[in-house]
Length: 472
Image (cartoon, rainbow, N blue to C red):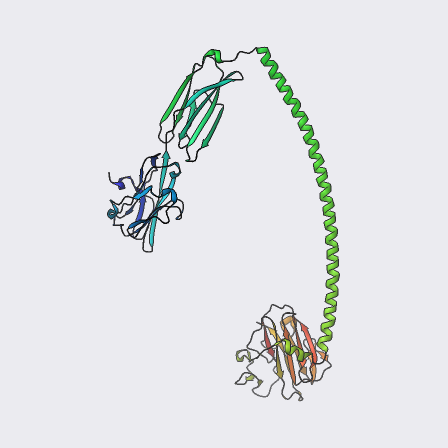
């Protein structure tokens, strides 16, 4: 019989081929041999293809066929010597695997995987393993309460069999040996002395095969007891159970309440202690932080105003070579060819506009400085320089202030001012200004590079902004 007659589509592909496996589970008998069918459609020669049979993943290889031969290196140990490829129909696209000496652990899903070049497809095959074990052994273990206890035991079955009595069993236990086979033991208490024969049957749910055994229980085996004695024992048992239950309930309630009270007191003490420690730690931290902030502010304020502080900063800050960005310049300004100086194209006219140009370099982090030389500083000229935020509004007249994204100082009527409040700075008009930008501490400072004196410092709104050198 041709293998493909048992197959139906399990996996489809829009590429070169599809892999087909059986639509119904394959049933195998323990210790026997079984063939798991698999083929490609349309039918083609698969001798030069790569074929894998594996369980749930590639590492659980059952059979590997590569380079026209079976590979044993990556095969699971429990399948070595027990599997072989049915090669009779490889040229017709059939690649079934034969499993010898079927064991209980062979039960489950298998994957049939074909690969040709970069294209691959797979299908699933379910194998159901079944085995019929020993006939049930039934024997009487002795009297039990008001009846006779009968035990039925059978071993070597797979999967777990169904055990049936003429009456419902009282107790049923099961176990699996090292090979995965089931041993079943079930107990029945027969209380009807007229029962006569008691039958135990064991059924394999897959194969439908059954084994049974009957035992005859003579009437003398059943215990005889006085009805008054039985009633007394029942009443005494009930009273004892009620008494024990009441004592246990009272003790449990008392113990629970005592434990809850102790736990609540413990948690309350721990919470108060944690709160006290936390408040002390926060108080100490705030006092220390306040003292550090005050000392730092006093130190920086004094240090910035110190003579030659700018020269010291030049050692700590990275010099920035600023080139002017012609695209950012006002139309009335002329930028030199080397992009290092700016002048008016013509004599400036009072148009009410603000004239400015930005440096080409954007500054995002670190500490840097650059120096600006003001030519003809002794003449009555007006200028402003510093830094501005990226994307600030610079059309027409605008206010150069931190709120608008500008941090600048300037000269008007031969006096130095800090913009925008136009506070006059009692310092001489500088001819060479150093701009020191510290994005770590979040400030920008201006120094007269002629004598090293401090002109003014601004705190920045945020040290994470992108800034550009500003000239106006």
